Image 1 (cartoon, rainbow, N blue to C red):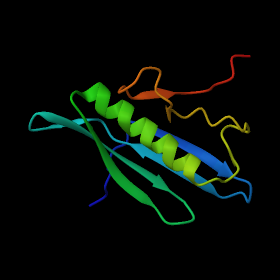
Image 2: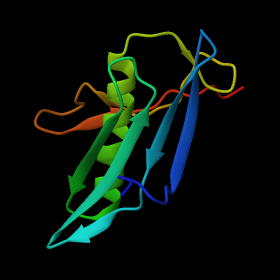
Image 3: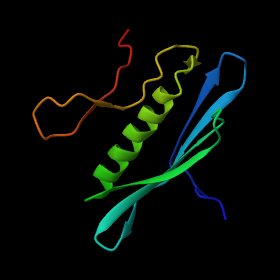
Image 4: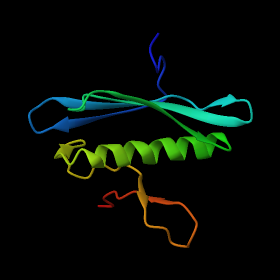
Length: 111
């Protein structure tokens, strides 16, 4: 059985050699009192990644999944393109604005 049978989010990034990295994200699912979002990254040099991110509600679970994806892609330290641009527009963990608080940000062109 596939880790993600029906993705609700998908993004394809292009490597400079012409191959691609595919990101797949499932809808958050309630398990007990916590929510979990399954996500996959296919086409990484070290092999595919299939993980799950949890949260106290569906939105937090999805935000944590999206930032974990951005962090994992950044860890590849590989030149990638999204729609022909070097701006991958992925959410990433950011330095906290206030102590003891988690932060994330995304950079996207506005023009």
